[in-house]
Length: 126
Image (cartoon, rainbow, N blue to C red):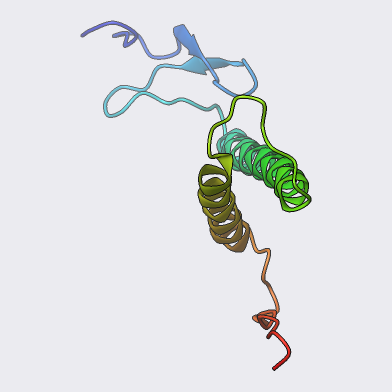
């Protein structure tokens, strides 16, 4: 037998990955990772919540970048020129569209559009 398995059942060689309680070595098959089904479920929920929190943090960062770009676009529309002399408008517009698209797609994945209602695109007065 190898590594964490033991020929003598009842001898503890591992601990539960969730609660830290000792695990008993089983005779055959895959070694256990959790002491109970409850610990396995809690570990799954912890991982799922952590992934959702990470996604929401990333969405918040995208929203802040989008807001910063909107502020810069407002300044550019009022005649402000960046000090480095680059043509920042094209780059800024491209980046803003990319950020807005990514934010919309990722927000939808998290359930941001639960009603199925889409906001209509405003039309210019004719």
